[in-house]
Amino acid sequence: ILDVENPDTADVIAKVPESTVEEVDQAVRAAYTAFYDGPWVNEYSGAQRRDAMLALADLIAEHRQQLELIESINTGKPITDVRGELDDTIDLFRHFAGYADKVQGRHISAQAHTTLEGYTTKVPVGVIAFINAFNYPLCLLAWKVAPAMAAGCTIVFKPGPQTPLTTQYFAHLVAQTGLFPPGVFNVILGGVAVGQALVDHDLVDKVGFTGSVATGKHVIRSTASTQNVRATSVELGGKSPGVVMPDVDLEKTARLVVFGTMGNAGMNCNALTRLWVHRSIYDEFLPHLKAAAEAIQLGTPQLDNTEMGPLIDRRQYERVLEYIRVGKEEDKAELLTGGKPALDRGYWIQPTLFSNVNPKARIATEEIFGPVLSVLEPFDSLDEVIEIERKAEFGLAAGIFSRNHQDIAKFTRKMRSGTIWVNTYNLLTSYLPFGGFRNSGFGRELGYESFDGYLATKSIIDDISY
Image (cartoon, rainbow, N blue to C red; front, side, top):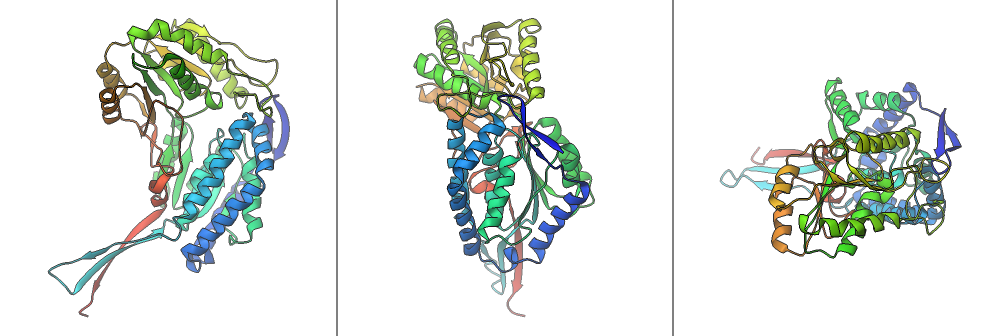
């Protein structure tokens, strides 16, 4: 049995059963049977899958108030943030439903050899095993499940053990539509052992994982060492840089930077956590940054005026506090604001800013996954920043704040980052792909690229003279 907490208070709010290895096997075999023998792939047209997904999106919309409250309590997210995530979840199922009846191949002429015809078809990859992170339980579910469903795949889904509740509610809604055949969507619950049994199962055709670099590397090794090699898509960590050029609006940019760092209490893989500020405005910019961080409203997540919530659990809370200690004592960084627990309950930590941080310091290079921003030592040349950052360990996201189009073009062209924001941060849409380079993983979520990742290409060569 798994205890499920409310991070706001650290109270246990639910108990859920942990799946056994036998139940993992049952779930995978149900998905396998649904794929090879059921109507989802073998009888449903793309239009029928589209309509099923649209009906599911409508049902999510009908139940959104319940889902919002459950998600806010289980994650500690401000209710205003969760409302936006429900908007995104509904949009994602509607968006990817539109792809379901548009799976297309190509005709490839043999030209001179006119009796030989070649063409390709796109077919669903098969049984997909998803292992989700705790930080966006329902929204990341939609990122993964919607394109896989549209492609015609069947799914076994494991949510993060801290935040399983909206996944269970979602599974109930899938069944309630009456349009998804048995075995198309399956949920298992648990931690490492359950995830390992899922990744190791030989009937799984592809694994999609979101989580830490260490676990992601283990997943990749596991999928290569099983009897049947299978595809993987992994969205891992980040230490995303932002650059503030001297021509910016200082107050507006400070607010955007703080939003990019402190959103979801900093528990974002793409959070802006390394900030480069031009020397000519460094001292003038820091007070604006400090004021923006200190203006963030902490409090009961279900109240509309709350802007930032707690960390997800005690382990993450203690990890972030330890990094704050490292920043002060080992890295010798200047604490600009924050750095302490907040409120008198749960897993709350103040928005925290360090300044004059050595770019090689631990707090500047290691993923903290909390509300901590390292403002690095001042820089003079954008070229030197790009040279450092494009060779960094991670390559998930980056941002630049500037009015100079030459600087913007140089930054967006040369940076090795999967997503680059210009004069904004943290904004994502269903139609633009998201993913990274190097230790930030491979594969793409969102956009057509995500949908295409759940399709495999067949080539057919036909000698029409036979």
